[in-house]
Length: 78
Image (cartoon, rainbow, N blue to C red; front, top):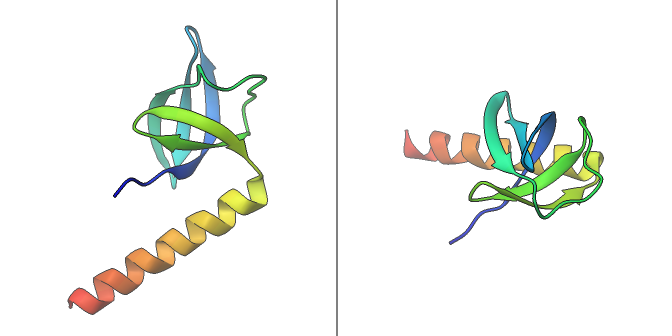
């Protein structure tokens, strides 16, 4: 199963790279597939590549759902 998740762009780097934040965790990714990217934009990332921009509200809702799923999974494992 593959999972692509939303992340917020926190810094644009040279050579079509950027730093993104996923729930407070920073990661360097390739943004070669995205045009007109700016700090504060949200992107969908998969295996180190930004695939597309996403609406900020949709990104936040998706991240919240992922947090809820994770909490339920950890609660069920107890």
